[in-house]
Image (cartoon, rainbow, N blue to C red; front, top):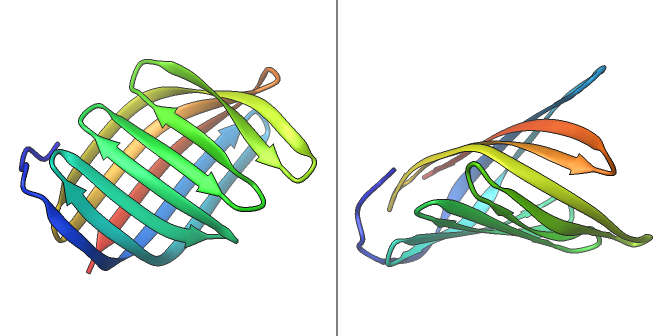
Length: 139
């Protein structure tokens, strides 16, 4: 993890998101590339980008990532390594209670971008989906 504490203003950088999903009898890979607003304030990084008709906002802190997705489908998810957190996945048809158990979280970020990797198990109604997410931010 990066240890620099200097803040820097928002800048537009390229973001690539790779999410590998697996469950019993199922495997899928979702790739998204876009531009993001990327800034640092103290020891927190803030990333905002559009994806599949939604706005995604990430706050990366020393030992957690919070993700807020707004739009037709939305959620506020907190990823803390070694912990399970609950959230509501909002759809036009109603909300679905879900949880995530974060297996690991690593990041190396600086004013030019960097990499975020985290693995987690998502649970909805007893069905589990294992995810490995890799986010690359670059000029």
